[in-house]
Image (cartoon, rainbow, N blue to C red; front, side, top):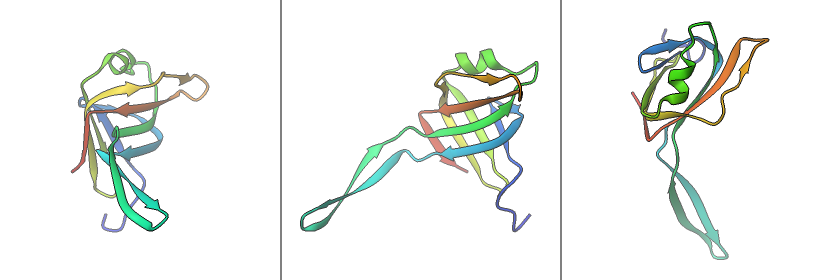
Length: 119
């Protein structure tokens, strides 16, 4: 699909594919730049480390690997996007508390990791 830039996505955790519910966001940068300005103008920028992440919404079927996800602290998360790009988060863990919306059968999962890269 030459012109497709959004839509169908796939996310897997250590090779186990999750059923996505409608949201996937990735930020795989290892650092963040911030401009520095003073009274005489722009002096340059500072660069600080940041935690890469993959944030998603997933359906929670009966066989959902909740225990594996909450206990994992060195997982590999792979996100394949509709535009043909993929992102990999390594050394990952599940950040924050996990909540399941029983009425919708969905949960929001934010994975953070030691490193991320686009492939």
